[in-house]
Image (tube, rainbow, N blue to C red; front, top):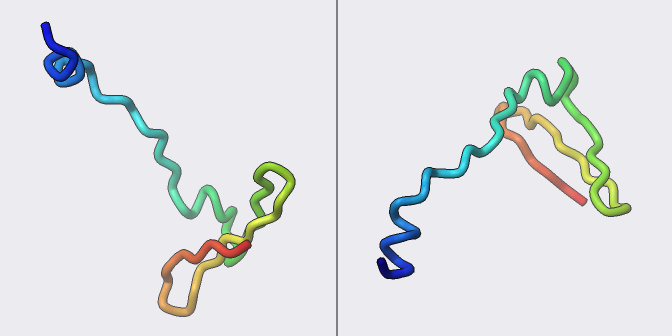
Length: 53
């Protein structure tokens, strides 16, 4: 079996899914710490998410 054939037969990896309401905890902004840096995840006026460092 070739490498490509083996790759195609592997089961898809499950990606965790979070609901934004759970992540935001009913707030419009949360801070996320990643490798010593703080990022802000905000809900915009148009109800979109924006991540800034």
